[in-house]
Image 1 (cartoon, helix red, strand yellow):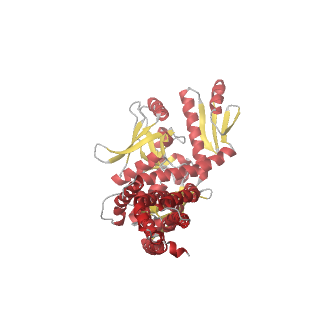
Image 2: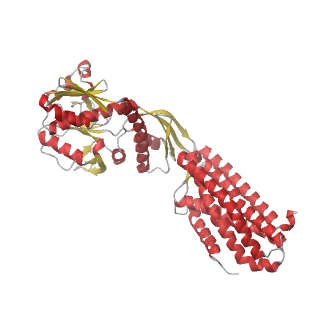
Image 3: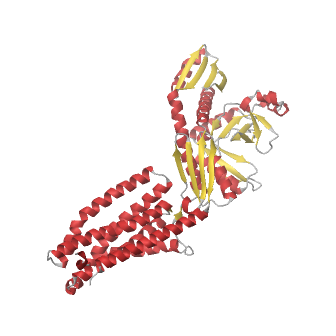
Length: 523
């Protein structure tokens, strides 16, 4: 009896499966483990809506900001830049600058520009509006997913539902504190704006009546640290968070957490130009519509970096830095549906699935042993290695096991022995013709290979399609099926073939094909 490379591969697969499966079977053992999905361990289920109209308004403000910076950078006199009635309006004071301004406005894609007597209106085309709304939802999905990944949650599900809805599932969220923190991280707009303080009227803004304050619109912003204090700022921001490249937690001179942020090259240039022209004036750092600080500009600030300070805990500062790094939401989101999935459902599901898996496994093992004799035992060895490989690979890559995923493992049990059933039947046919054991094994595997390969490839293609276009639970099913198919190709074809080759001399000498392949039971 000599080992061959097929048997060596089967042994290595067994060792690999045991090594990476044990931490999952015994949670006390350190190592990579399979993560349970929402339907098995409980967690938080949310359906979010996206206010896509706000994305259009945000784009208009961004256009207004770029026009303002272009005018200041090129010494073009403009007046009254504002956003009103879904348009950017402003007046050009010197007609000699009309050609330069017109050329600049042509570079802004997806807009319609109207000019008459030096008065300009810039509006977004209907096609671009719809594009912005779709982009707002897609960007919200990507941003939420990035935030949750940095938050440290394992395998969160973030998927689009309908036109403007987002499904979010967070496995493992159990305490109200964890739920609250996750909700705040998801819903935080994290919209950073640097805005000029209206120095002339800012000192009087806190003395205005409510009616008088209302006439200023969005220009009056609340102070984040002192809510009773108001700030009057320019309507059009100098720059916004789209130019931010990094944000991380730091500490000020009093060892309090702050958020240090860095701007890209364009933002750094705009920031430097503004601070150079505004020495002695104040700059408001606005986050989600609240002023966190309004320091006086003492000199030109180059390098494109700044700091947001507040009464943060370390955890709050870290979450805010995550939100800023992952990008601001183009449009606000709101909660449409929320429910907590209790872990008791998961425990019942796991128990029922384990009963199905074990009972199915036992029945298949008994059937193979009774019907195919020693060949059935060999097929069962391959089946055990197959299951170990599935669990080991899933644990290695930190995959999430869902209830459909467990169903996929149960299905894989049947699929794994199916290949050996085909192979054993082909071997039986060749032996019945009077051929030698060696020829029967080789021809049997050769004839069975085409049918096994074709069926496995078509199933694998379907599993890949399910993974690409399905959501969380469907992906879990696709993952287990895919791994199971690839593992069965190794164990049920290469592995068992190697065992037969290793034992073929003993099989030939035994002169009892019924014991090895159960041939008498065929009639």
